[in-house]
Image (tube, rainbow, N blue to C red):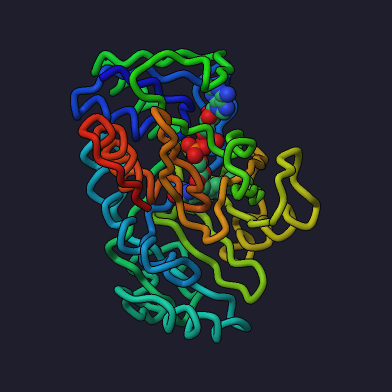
Length: 328
Ligand SMILES: Cc1cc2nc3c(=O)[nH]c(=O)nc-3n(C[C@H](O)[C@H](O)[C@H](O)COP(=O)(O)OP(=O)(O)OC[C@H]3O[C@@H](n4cnc5c(N)ncnc54)[C@H](O)[C@@H]3O)c2cc1C
């Protein structure tokens, strides 16, 4: 089985790994000049938070997302399994109760328990929710590690290749072009996400912190070398051009509300991109002859790609067996 995977974002790379593990001969092509150059996945927070996501997502996200907690550590180094902490500014503590009613698998923490988990937040929050089974990773390191793993498995990744899918010659084509596939998927829409990366050595966090807010809930994810990713807005727009002043203010205010030390942090990067989403905000696998399309990963590219790549690989192999099943 010769398969070409189009797109070296998280969907394409995770699918390529699973196809190669199942014995396919795989090539990956991407139109970017290098890994991450043109992919939404480069801007993700990297939270693997199936239970927190239940606050606003379908139950399938919690159910299928749990596969990510095993898949990522089994395939790359650097997944940090220290849970997620959810806090709210003192005037918005009602948001914590609301969040708790929509989610499961958490513990209520008091101020001392918060300080035991995150000593630098000592005295800042009287109550918090802790989701101990969740994890996070650095998406950029994860993509680089997946690419290296693919290389070891004999899979070639070619960059600078803006391909036309009907022109490709292989037994199967897996279309993982993200929002660039919108012309072939009329119900795919773009949801703009904006993020900021800051650096400070004045504060240390061990896990993602979600900061609840009635309008704009945000999160801060610690990375190596004093870096913190602050994300992410969610705006119904396919304009990936630049961050708005309002979003920048909201993102930096969330960090400052978490700890004033962030006020002195250096702004290292501002990023925007467009998440691909279907109307129900769930990913889908669609098959069209020898083409299998995996798209619509929305806010859950790292969380859901292990489960949906498996379904995409099933679709690739099932067609050979004559079966005609397309799964969500
Ligand atoms: C700010 C932000 C924060 C996020 N945080 C999280 C998070 O914490 N956890 C999480 O799970 N998800 C998160 N997401 C969502 C996640 O990033 C997306 O769901 C995911 O990146 C979608 O991956 P993809 O592989 O489908 O698309 P992409 O990453 O966009 O990859 C598509 C690839 O296809 C290539 N391509 C397109 N057209 C062609 C062509 N014609 N020929 C060749 N190559 C082509 C592109 O170059 C690109 O590399 C976040 C997103 C944003 C924007």
